[in-house]
Length: 295
Image (cartoon, rainbow, N blue to C red; front, side):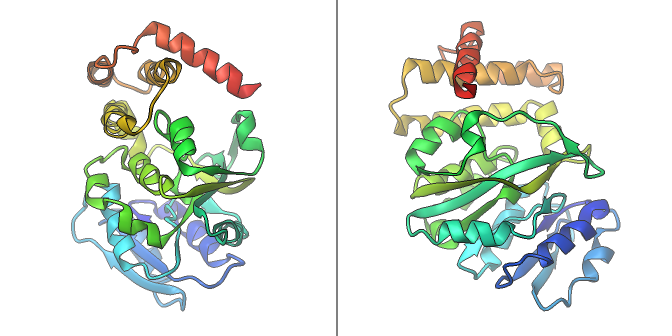
């Protein structure tokens, strides 16, 4: 559980981790030099029998994925859950995810997430038809359809994966993408086997003003890094013209969001205009693609 300045959410988070009906786990807590009351709260749990260690940085790393790497190096279990410190888990989350991973071909399992606000109130969201049913899918196909151009695994807290796959993941490369490293991380894992999805909303993804991703979006950094990852990974796939247009259209839409600053928009456009499909036509193709997915 990596944490930075989430004191107001920590007790609920810790309690929902320790209340899991799957009990065979070790908890590694990392604090990235929080400046709020986080550390005093975490100290209350330090001696819990399922807490393996509490690692506290003396200075802030300024990189979420460096913290991920630090925790992964400590992990000894068969499966790994990166439980972000501002989210909430249903008590059945771990047992359901582990059951999915007991299929030898599955390397990563994730569930549908509810989105909640700072006070834990549900935020209304619409979901394409795919996400209303359980499924298992070849990882290559899942990356092509749902990770290469998009980041449908938008919250690490909804994911459990097999630790053995880390042998084939270049964590040092992931840490270079300070805003979009999670996308590259999930892609690197998914390409190693099957992906399992559980449609039950067993994870709550909290939205609030102190999210690292909010700052990255405002600067357009995540959109720029999404393009770098697209250029890095797309040569492995024989994408159709339609797929390329849909991916570029999605990012055209992302750039137009009011949550992206004018300077961020310019940086993002500069990155994505390298793709010949990028532009208004791509956005229309993307809208048609979304309409088909919803049917």
